[in-house]
Amino acid sequence: MRKSTVIKLMLLSLLALAGVSSASSPAGDVKEGKDLYEQEKYDEAAEKFGQAQEESPESDIVNYNLGAALYKKGQYKEAAEAFTRALVTEDRALEAKAIYNLANSTFQLGSQTAGADPNSAISMYRESLDYYKRALELDETDRDAKFNHELVEKKLKILLDQMKNQKKNEQEENDQEDGHEQSQDSKQAQEEKGEQKEAQQEQGQQQNDESQEGMDKGEDQKEAAPSVDGKDDTAKMSPGEARMILDAYGQEEAREDVKNKGRARIRGVYKDW
Image (cartoon, rainbow, N blue to C red; front, top):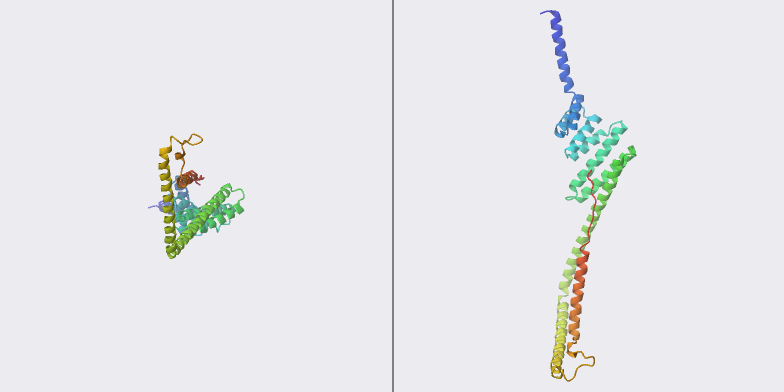
C-alpha cells in the first residue's frame, strides 16, 4: 500500500472520530435537545439536556434548558432544582428568566399540595412571591412576573381565608360539644321547664274549650241577636288561635328569608398561565 493512501485513511479515521465526539458533546446534546423542545417532544428533549448536564453539571445554559423541559413535563420539583442551579450564571438576562421560571415551578408545587397540605402550599406560595419580586428587580418591564405576582397574592389570600374559616368552624363545633355537656348537667331543669310548658298548654286548651262552648251556646241566638255591625260574632278567633296563626306566619317568613339568602352566587376569575 502506498504511503499516501495510508495517510488518507488515517485522516478519514480522525475525521470520523471527531464527528462522533462532536455529536456526543454537551454542545451537540444541547442543540439536539433544543430542536426536540421546539417540536414539543419534551421527554426526548429532557433526556438530551440530561445527558449534557451529566457532562457539564455546572453549566448555566444546560441547567436552564433542562429545567424548561422538565417544567413542560410537569416535573416541577426537578425543574425548580435545575433552575436553581442555573442561577450561578453571570448573564443577567438568563438569571432573570431562571428566577421567573423558578417562581412558576414553586407556585405549581404549591398548587399541587393545596388540597392535602394547605400549610405547605401557603409556604410555597410565599416563596414564589419572593422569586417574582426578584425577577422584577432584575427586569422591571417583566409584565408576566408582575401579573403572576398579583395572581399568586390572590390565591394565597383565598387559601388563608379558607384556613381561617376552617379553624372557626372547628372552634364552633368544640363550643357546641361543650354546650352539649353542659346541657346534660341541666337536664332536670329543662324537664321542669317542659312540665310548666305542658301545664300552660293544658290551661290554654281549657280556655279554648270554654270559648268553644260559649260559641255553641250562642248558635241558638244567632238569628235573634245579630251583631251591631251585621257580622257574625262567632267568626272571631280566640287568643290561642290568633297566636297559632301568627307563629305559623313567622315561621314561613323565616323560611323565605333563608331561601332568598341561598340564592347568592359567588363569582370567580381564573387565568391559566
